[in-house]
Length: 492
Image (spheres, rainbow, N blue to C red):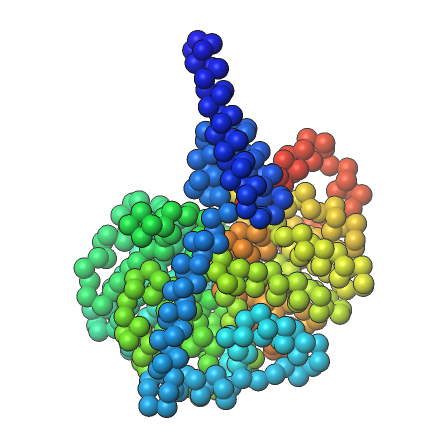
């Protein structure tokens, strides 16, 4: 390549970089995110600019508001149907009658904070919740619930794999649809790329009563071109009465096969009024992707009458780049700030915003026993290294960090003072907290918290605790790799 062409390319790269820099700086954003994108754009000529166009977080809010407007439209339709003579009057009555308060002042303070953040997601009593470990426990229970369905099944997953497990779920749904049960399936187009590219879903098209729809906000027809807005929810609702939610995707890696242990993950079976809240969360996403008539979605059939089935007080917490963009971060900080004795955190990806990191340090400094369990070997090496760049700050403040031995741990949980638990789909990283659509449950139930704590203690027994002096003695090249990956923290 001659010198003239090289000079021209250099000038063009500078112009593209300057244009992108101006675009970044004209919009208010976190300094770390701006620096990360400028680094990528300069270090990878032209490719960096293309990545910014596809994944630039500055466009999240604009695209997220399209989802927000869809949510508001369905909410308006719902409120019109909450009059005494209309189908959803019962659901409104349930929300009023089951709305309650936790017992202790500390729990009441946390719940009041969450109520101000998400006033339309009330704390409901009369629920039952059960932890299911790995797909070995979760999948049989989920398939049994599908087999029991008599009215409808709503399934949502980030990943549906083109493997024996993914096909088994779709085959069961196809059978139920042919038997007259209405089945709706929503999968994330990005997370399920392999299944989509291999034609998994095409084989189920045309089956009456079974609709399989991809979640994607990169659709020129809808003028959606944002790859960042992924739907990371994993929820199954059967007949509006029982539901499953947690970290487990529908692929074979979550079950024992070929002599290999499954991914270590937590899923949760729930029943009671909270299932109606999960139902509505699913229908909001479905409505956004399909524009199906609200009259067909907001029916009495989807929100059936039910009696209390347990003593757990549970609140659904939905997060995403809509009006609730900071909800998960704010609620996590509030939970950490409310801890007085003990705090357990389990997460596969530990790349939190600085405010959560500071809250963890302050909790440890005021005497709270803070225990964080993170996988020793991460399936995304850059995320693992970026998280490890934060260990020194945690360990020096007295936070206990331990790395779980393989198999890879994909579980998510927070336990506060053996009384309150936060479980669901969100990881403790910027992507889950600010970019993805997620669903967590805040559970005020001491027996459940103690059961979950025993599970976490078992994971800790399979982990290696880190010591500050030994950690600081790691090789210099390792520190460089960690700090390099940490530059990408705002966009991981």
